[in-house]
Amino acid sequence: MTNLSHLRQALRRQGIAVSYERGIYRLRSATSEAQVLMPESLPLPSRAVEQLLSFADVRRPSGEPTVYCACAMPDFHPGELAPVGSVVATEPDFVIPQAIGTDINCCMRLLATGLSRERFLGAQESLIENLKTSLLVGARNIPVPPQAFQALFDEGPGPFLSALAPEGVWSAVDRERLHRELTDCIGLSTLHSSFCYVPDSFFDRDRKLIRDAQFGTVGSGNHFVSLRCAVRSPTAPVPGR
Image 1 (cartoon, helix red, strand yellow):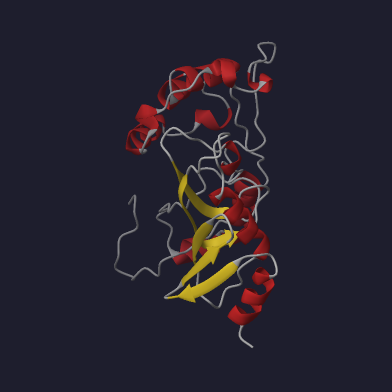
Image 2 (tube, one colour):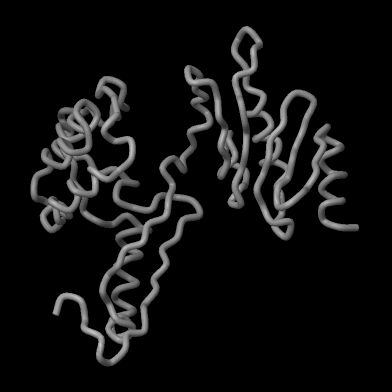
């Protein structure tokens, strides 16, 4: 019996019908349906399927359906309430707060260091230890005054950077580059928020500095940092020289 047959039987017992065609699972319960883009060789978690169909069936208090489409990507797996890797499209005036999980703004980014393979291997142990300390353990010194957080929520990311004193990590960052990158971020120019809605921990005026446990890290969960070094030809120039 194939994996798909086992899956169909398991989900059928929960009242969920499943079919698979051209790399897409199509799921249907009595009240909702969803699609999952995933190779057949990867497991389809039944708990995540239940969560996705549950969100696909979210309705207004009057009982009217609000979800146009519910889909999931290949990293599909269960979350606390909403499955990770899912996309739920609703009516423009309808928001599902529980669908915004701890992986909000999760993404991938490529940073070019200019290191050759030889230079990397010469300092491999210390570089990896520094990266683990900075990105995974969260041991960097990233001090933020409450006034900077207020500027972030009331005015935006640009004023937030301008309100940071040259202390800790902020004493060595390229601020001009940060401001340039902010202008390239999609949606930041239309961001509207207010400091009055932030948690009390960010509003404590008696604290001169706030050091958020996740700020400046890759966050908790199944995140990773990958290092790749290009093999440079003997005649190729080293960046910066």
